[in-house]
Length: 105
Image (cartoon, rainbow, N blue to C red):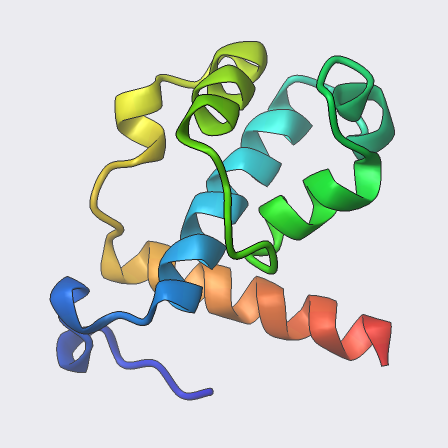
């Protein structure tokens, strides 16, 4: 997917792109906290595979309270987590997701 930040205003992003940016922010915060998905998932009522789907933007329904709890657990400000993505965030999230998808194939 070719994403050009100057051609992709935030209001025209897909839900998938927004989920991938949100997931990227969570994934990076978890990494900064020094936790694996398995370690982090132990503190929540869902599996490591569910956490993986959240972090890669593949889980369509994510509860607001789950996001708040994850952000707090990782030491990430919730307002920062849900802030408007920058063009760089969008590009980075899409590139990371494309690498992830290629590894799965």
